[in-house]
Image 1 (cartoon, rainbow, N blue to C red):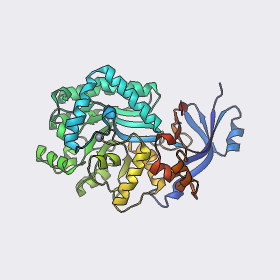
Image 2: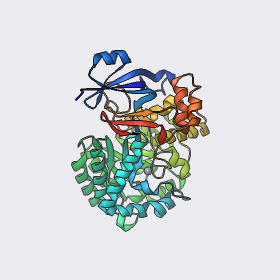
Image 3: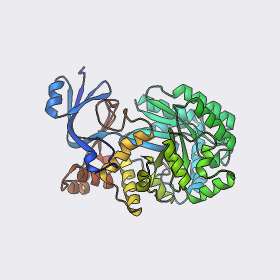
Length: 430
Ligand SMILES: [Zn+2]
C-alpha cells in the first residue's frame, strides 16, 4: 500500500478571512497536496511534493480547483423528500409539509433510507460536513449518525425538541426532551468524527420549561453545540412575542433559558434588534445565513455586509428543505444575489470562504476542516471550472482564479463536482 496520495491541480486555500482587507489577497494557490493518514500533510509545488513522497499515488486533476469540501451549517435531513414544496410561508409550510413528513421518521427503516439518501446527495454536491436537525424521534438521530459515521464524515446533528404547537405525534415533554437528548449525546458525541448539537427547533414549539431543561443540559455538556432558529419571518417574531410576553425580544427567549452561548448556531437571524445583535456578537455566537430558504419561503434579506462589519460570526447553509437546493454552489449564488439586493456585491473569495472556512468557524471546527492547508483533515472537493458549455466559455476568458471560479458559483451544480474526498479517501468517482 502506498503511504500517501499526491493530488495535483489548482489547490485553493485561504491565508486569512477575505472579509478583512483585499478579498483576492486572502486566496492562496498551490500546485499540489500530499495526503497522509486522512489529513493534509503538505501543500506546495508539484515537483517538491513528488520528490518528498516518491511512493505516493498520484492523481492529476488538471486545471480543476482542489479546495476544502463545503460545510453546510444548517440543514434538516428529514426534509430531503419534501424539498421544493410549493406555495407556503414559514408557519403554514411547517404545518402543511414539514410536520407530516417528519412524522414518517417514527419508522426506523424510513429514517435510515432518507439519512443515506440525504448524505449521498450532499456528497454529490461537494458537501463534506453539515449540521443537521433530525426529528423528535431518537431513531432519526441514530439513522443520521450511523450513516455519516459509515461514510467517515465529520457531521453534526441533534434530536429536534418540541412540546407544543406541533402534532402530538411529534411532541416530547421537557423531561423526555432532556432525557432523550442526553442519552443520544452520550451515545454519539465525540464518536468517530461526530458532534452532538442540542436542538430546540425554535421558541414557538417549545415551552419555557422545555427550553430551561435544554439549557440545563447544555450547561452540563458545554462542549456540545446548540442549534436553533431565530428571527426568520415577521409573523414568527410576532408569534414569539405573544408566547413569551415578558421576554425582551426573540433572542431573550433563548438567553433567559441558558440557550445563548459561543457554541450556539442561530439559523436565519434576519430581523434582529440592536440588543440581539450586540448580545450575539458579544458571546461569539454564530448567525447561519440560509439564502435560498430566505427567498424560497419569502423571509427577507440577511444583511451580510452589516453583520460582518459589526463583528458577527457568520456561516452559510442550504436549510434543506426550506432551502431549495442541496448545493452550496447554488447557496453561494443566492447569497451573492441577496448581497446585491442589500447593496453589497460579495466577492467570489468571500463566498467560497463562507461555504468552507466560515461555516467551519461557526461549527468551532477551524483547524480540522474548512481550509485545504497542512494539518487539516483531508475533506476536499474537486471543482471542474468548465462543467457545462455555458460555464466553460465564460471561465475560459477569466484573468484570475476568482474570476474563473465565479461562473461555477453562479451557474454550477453537481456536474461541477469532479470528486469528493472524505478523510483522505476518494468516496465517489464521477
Ligand atoms: Zn431550518
